[in-house]
Length: 558
Figure (spheres, one colour):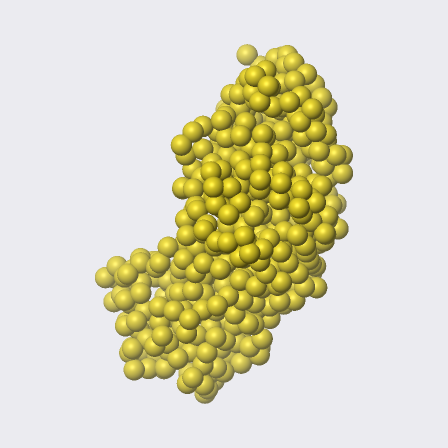
């Protein structure tokens, strides 16, 4: 049995670094040089030219700590890329992993580099500690700031960070127009409900990433923003007219004009386009609308084919064949088995369902993309985050945080010596970022006590929150809604705090649609997502350090 000696640091003699979780962040020298070595393992499994060609069209998904399961597939030429997801690695470790994978790919039969992609779109999809990349503001925060120059610069700098980590493709921008307040999966991932704004900011993202040498992928064509269901869990159906669909298509048309590298399809059924097939499997949507009417000449990617909206009633293998037949070029197969997917496609070719010419075209499209973007990154000169990155993130937060209403003239707080109780309903992963809210108020002389409650508060949470509020002059309440409606316990406790008779301010921490649940709130501030910059900007706005510049980018009933 071959042992992957190259990847074994002394501290992990029981398994390779690719397969071994690494909770401890290593020093920069250790991390960058961890995967360098004079020899590479060989995995002997001869594939036919057809099988190798199909392999270039397959991209499985893996958490970075478990990506070692794909090392044989990389070395044999069975896959053309990898989508990296979660993992508490810093960028040094991530670079080591991606560098090692590219070395394996270089020794594979086709000697083709890997596409290494990430969902670095900002907001709740990408936790700050994931892959060691800094946290981005949500797209809805960027939409509220509506500063195209800062948006483009931010994603240029984000692209530089991706490149340092050895990632060459980013599934961004999100161009979905969030017209459905109950949308369970898009929400703050969208720039808002204005197609023109989404088109302008989406183009800025595309230009920024391309300038940094990262392949941008716009998603989710033809639009997921009007959905009432999550395509990870089921197949959404959007019953809107062809005329109404035009608004959702505008940002994608602009992305085509901007020569976006890739566009990702949505597992959404649009009866106005195709009454039977979701967009990913619809010739009318992919070959007809995207390739034909919009004139897109780049690579078309599927969303992950292991999502229920794609393969819930079939298999990843069947979904892969259907996507290729519709005109998709590059298949994200999620946790699907590359060998089984490849075999299904070979069978489809042998049956005449997929022509050799069509397969050659797909492979050529992927090869062109790789030639431009997938050159393995050299060892970076510096792995430290750019200070400019932080400055731009802060500027967007300061411009985007929104004073939705203030009928009691609470902002800015006076007198400066007021005592403030802040009760935040936040998941643990965001609790550390909320600490920054207090700093501007304390600089102004206020005494601030913070209590982080569970998103679904219990009796203990309620008791502590009410005790905190009883001792303060002003109560600040942070509500949290992501996908579904907030828990009834959270809503009821917030309403109780708002009706205490004292001056109160509501911070909508994530989705601004939850503002509609609290018409009694006289002062409302929207953050559109929790980062250290957005939480500090909310405190700065309430404390009078910054002016309220942000505008709601979606329609919210007040």
